Image 1 (cartoon, helix red, strand yellow):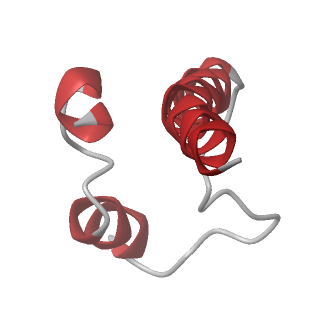
Image 2: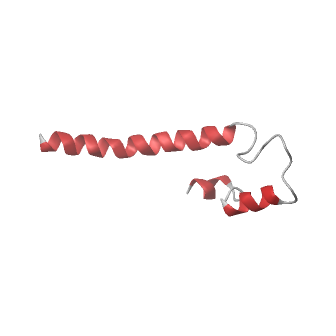
Length: 64
């Protein structure tokens, strides 16, 4: 029984990696950004937020 549980737990690792990878690339394939709103943010607030969360970096760096 313990070998079954261990095998299932080890299968979860690639599954979670695949789900995370698919989600990451789907979010980048959609138009817009997380900071798009109906109102324009004051000054360079959007640029500061993108820099803070690493969204200004190239896609491979964001993925890692």
